[in-house]
Image (cartoon, rainbow, N blue to C red; front, top):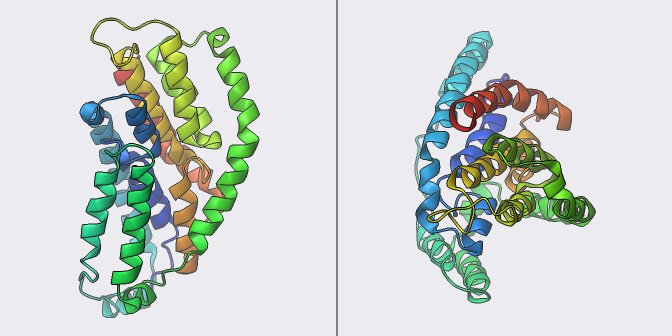
Length: 286
């Protein structure tokens, strides 16, 4: 049991870095990029997002280190002593699941419906071969998955009209510059889920006919980068920007972390991330 009291920000930075920003290098890392891969974007094309990934990951890690150091120094000495006594050496259990994870990764290269069937098979094998005590020790349950499924089912249903209007009226918005694609994709990804938003602007970029020979599916490389980075990075702006965000929140609460409200979370995300988005705009898309 963690004795430190000032720790509610840790899952928030986890959402920033692991659930969103960190997944921008391959289609396996974030759903929007996977949908781009399904649409025909080459699997390794996303490695071109490395400069964006490195810039924002480094910046957010520096902020986290400084903020964590500040919170650590505010902690009661008795809590720090108890925390040191409760340290458990890092170890790994259930290593066989790496085999099933490999199966899930290989499934990404299979066509429908073999892809989905392979993923279901790997999940069943994991359930059958993993000792129950490992899940019990990690407090595993299906509550976070169920909550996310219900929440995002509602989001997907209610956002359909908004996305249809956007698809129909997108050319009238005058969005033609990389920085515009970055911010339009990002802002809508923050509240409408980043995967369908990515697909909307992906289709819009193809429809504008701006591509030249050598571009990706008729989309200029810089614009596709702007769409990809906007969808992945700004999915971190709210709990509903990306499915894993809300799942991490639910898991953290089960481990007795006091998570902020919807708007409380956005104080963190806007305070930490928006300044870096502005820098990315000026450096890469200006």
